[in-house]
Image 1: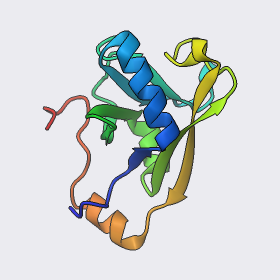
Image 2 (image 1 turned 90 degrees about the vertical axis):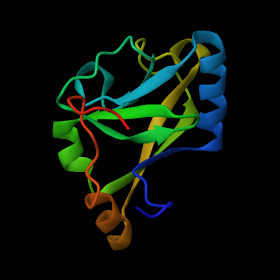
Image 3 (image 1 turned 90 degrees about the horizontal axis):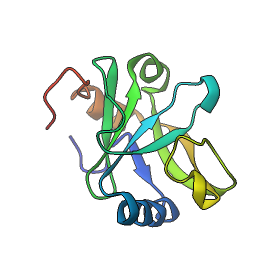
Length: 133
């Protein structure tokens, strides 16, 4: 797969916030919420405190090998997009680690190019049922 073909990345501001959160909480992970009370927000949890199931898809790793997951149902809607995780002022969900910081993670998206989509579809992402790379 080409080095530049990926499904998710962090902006510099998001990377900075993640470094702060890792310094306070240790290893973290992301899960893109599928709605309900959190809308469709990228949620940051201490790694291991959110149980990933067989119906979750690993979109990739961001920052320093931080796993970024999404539910399989939501992935079917978003599989043709590249996600950029940014941070903005404001209080998001009380469940995500950044909530007390007065900041919240926000997902921005763009359509994958044909070449990116072809490269990514050639290597389907693992699910929570698969052994991780």
